[in-house]
Amino acid sequence: EDKVVQSPLSLVVHEGDTVTLNCSYEVTNFRSLLWYKQEKKAPTFLFMLTSSGIEKKSGRLSSILDKKELFSILNITATQTGDSAIYLCAVLGTSGTYKYIFGTGTRLKVLA
Amino acid sequence: SQTIHQWPATLVQPVGSPLSLECTVEGTSNPNLYWYRQAAGRGLQLLFYSVGIGQISSEVPQNLSASRPQDRQFILSSKKLLLSDSGFYLCAWSRTGNYGYTFGSGTRLTVV
Image (cartoon, rainbow over all chains, first blue to last red):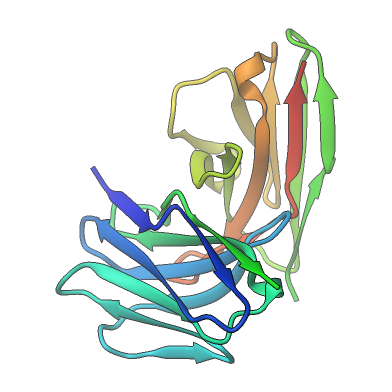
């Protein structure tokens, strides 16, 4: 059965800290991994990763994929209170349809 | 550009009452459509997906059903709500292929 596990489940840091969020997966014929940020309502897209070792960056956020060890990390440097959110990881395998399997998410709280 | 609309934003319904949540996509044709449910502070559970008009796949046995009467319209229904149906419901769409999802703004359903 396809599975995505995120850790930690929750995290509290202070502004300016750097955080690393983890996502490990077991899927049949991996195709891609997505990271989303969810504040109050709809998740918003952060990154799509398909190849190992290639870092994706957007401002203070970056992410990398390791297809050999079956995990991805999301780094946030110099955290701000606006980074407080649930961060979701989702993985697509080739089960015949385009269904992403989501992890339970990491709830990040950044204190001022 | 493509947009996805989901309504209502919030809903409070008594146990045993019917449910109808609607999702429409604009600016694209033949989208893959998805209904997810998110329990409080948790990840997303796939309920239904559809790759075409009238084609519905159910992921988990439950008290809900889905229909796709038109190409860009996806409806989530129940004949009789249960307390356990409470949650945050998200509609999403994707192109066929490795493109990721775009989510609607969600419906927070409380069954009382």
